[in-house]
Figure (cartoon, rainbow, N blue to C red):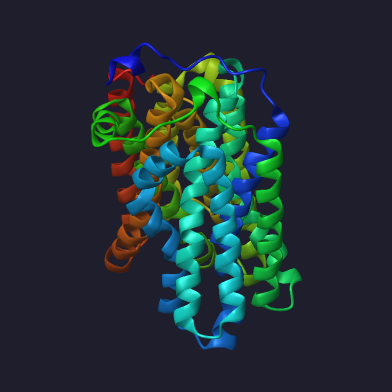
Length: 397
């Protein structure tokens, strides 16, 4: 670490501007709406453009792949160009990507548009926590990061609930593009610029290496394992509800939305629990609860209603993890540039888990049935418990 960075710790920010926090969280919700809109519009895309399930899968997986490959790179760009500017640019990218899709009529153009939107998604999901780490006082950090951590389930749930209101996928794309453009304007209006000691500089390879060697790597590993477990269930929840729990098609969407809402509750609860319980105990409890719930969900020993109740507990307990990880970034980084890189590393881990979870569990279930999914989750939970202890030992508790 450079000597001038050691001598220049992050100064205390001014009193928390919750209006700016709300705008940043809204940007995250908009980004996850773009992520979830393909799933709700899948029937229209199939009938209108003749897309196969594999093509739809490629459209849906673009964001996870870009996030898994580009999180640290996005952190480096944000550290160099400024978090507020890149947050707004990410929203503009989602607008441009959506409009490109609306104006095109081919699958190739639609896939390219998802690439543009995905780049915007990465900038938003890395830039949002970086802005909050700069703006929010230490006493408010857990609550602010708990609100931010709700962006993913909230945006996806909104996409599922509002998607059917639109007559076609193009009108849905236009509506969310307009909303994203409005939020971009709000970011430029409500979020203050980084000034003075908060201003960031270039991120040399040495600084990136420092982040990889420090506690942030333990945080990113924990996020990867949590995300793997979460999407191991939620990627297949509609199928599981129908096959394993015998739920009718009409109720599947409602129950899946309810399970997603439980994750929001867990994220909000983390903000209140962190000052009292601590990150190590919270992470360990979440890993243990998710492992135990997975056994009851995937192994056919409980009645369907009990298995679904465990889905709610699984989701809620998992919600304790993201905000506890993101709120610890300012504690384990020395400068705003280090913080941006650390957030990028965390989001890279999260997206890698999002990509690996469905792949591993899908193959396991195809070969050995639903109980194999429980084995995958239990192994990941044990590894997550080890990562939590690693984080504590590395100074990230």
